[in-house]
Each structure stands twice: as structure tokens, then as C-alpha cells.
Length: 83
Image (cartoon, rainbow, N blue to C red; front, side, top):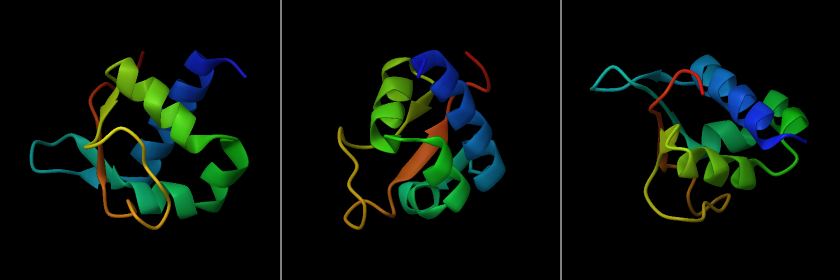
């Protein structure tokens, strides 16, 4: 699948599942994204899509690799509403 298309879908899912953070940017935790049924059906490799979006500076989060369970509480911040 096209990486840019997946990043656009990721933006939509973060907006759907997230809530405004202290700086009014949308924030969602990795656990919420990972455990959402719709996201599971859309993204074959959610972690890969997150890394691609981070490289494009569309989102930000602490660390390099997010793992289910261990990083469920890591906040993912939406930096750009579109690419």
C-alpha cells in the first residue's frame, strides 16, 4: 500500500480517537490506536505507518519503536492535519 495514503488514513484515525492536548493538538495513546478494531483492519503494520508518519513530521512520540503492552501509554501527538 502507498505510504502517503496510509499516513493520511492514520491522521484521520488519530483525529477520530484522540482528544485535544494541552497545546490544542490532537493526542492519542498508542494503546488506544493499537487496540481499536477499525485501525486493526486498516493498518497491516501500524508501527511501520507510525514510524513513516514520524519521519514525515506528521506526528511525534517519545522513542523509536512502539511495542504493544509495553508502550500502550505513550502519547502520540498529531502535528499536521494533512500532508
